[in-house]
Amino acid sequence: MNSARRHSLRPLPAALAGLALAVTGTLALHSTPAHAAACNGYVGLTFDDGPSGNTPALLNALKQNGLRATMFNEGQYAAAYPAQVKAQVTAGMWVGNHSYTHPHLTQLSQAQIDSELSRTQSAVAAAGGGTPRLFRPPYGETNATVKAVAAKYGLTQIIWDVDSQDWNGASTDAIVAAAGRLTNGQVILMHDWAANTLAAIPRIAQGLAARGLCAGQISPTTGRAVAP
Image (cartoon, rainbow, N blue to C red; front, top):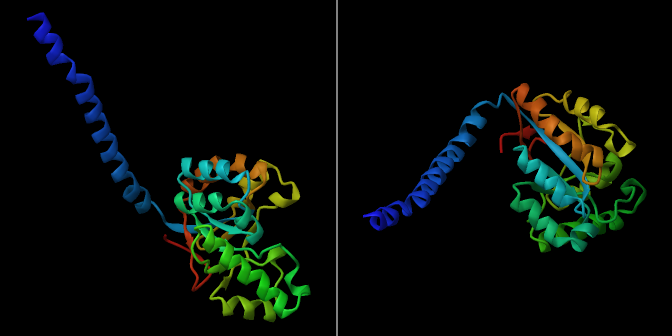
């Protein structure tokens, strides 16, 4: 009898584990629509200059905090770190074009600008990032020639509404405060390599949630943040 009882009890932990998994899965399935229902607006989180050795930590922080972002990759780094480009997409991020070598495009000839953008389109696609539809000119510098070349490749130019100043040594508190100025549809500039930005991500997520804002996709039509 004792032996029979032991055998009949053995499957219980597995059964309970299965039940827990089923419940967890159910909760996970229902969490996304509930979160989406709480979105009163969308903002565009953007990270320039990747991918790099810092990208895995950045992606992990974004995923842990339920955030999606647009990664404006440099072509030279997409070619050097193709696995990280693919990881960006796998993590639910969108990949944009940030030129190949990060030059001052307004100081280049049309042929040189064309090379910068076309090579990046190819490098990102070859790395598994798809064909970018968004383009951010380095330093936010642009002119009619830059815009014309971008249009040739079906790219919508995206600057920013809020500059986090993370490239300029801004503190984590300052970066969080900058994100706190975002309003519906707006886009913030941040960078893949900035340690203070990485540290700010959990607080950025909390601040957005408190204001009913969600991290959205940047529309290639309007250049504004919209629902994914």
